[in-house]
View 1 (cartoon, one colour):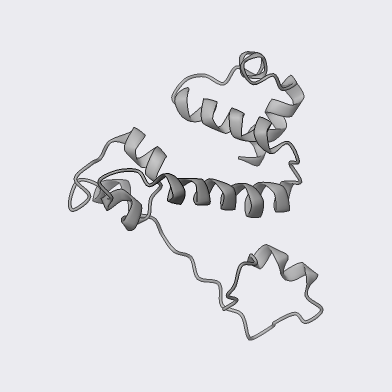
View 2 (cartoon, one colour):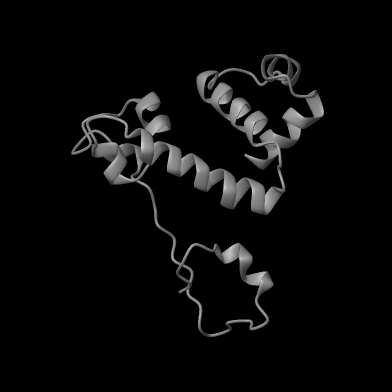
Length: 129
């Protein structure tokens, strides 16, 4: 098990293979069927904003610092590190818009106009997501 601020995706940077000494642990979010009780809400918007871990689903109000930290971590560790997306503001603008427009058809041109990104950039960012 690797601990610390680094992700296991960074293991390619290690000289040692860690063979026989690493154990991947997958933490599952709360299943949709489990959201009714004790989580009191099976609301899709609530789930999108809070994520799927019990602490956030049980909280009475969204914690701005906690939410910001999750978005920062998501961008820094998953998007920047794995996909090399450098335009943080543009990426997060598209991400927020996709959350608001979820459930509809994806129109790359409309998303590009709304976020002031190019159509190919929008498509690349969505593929990263």
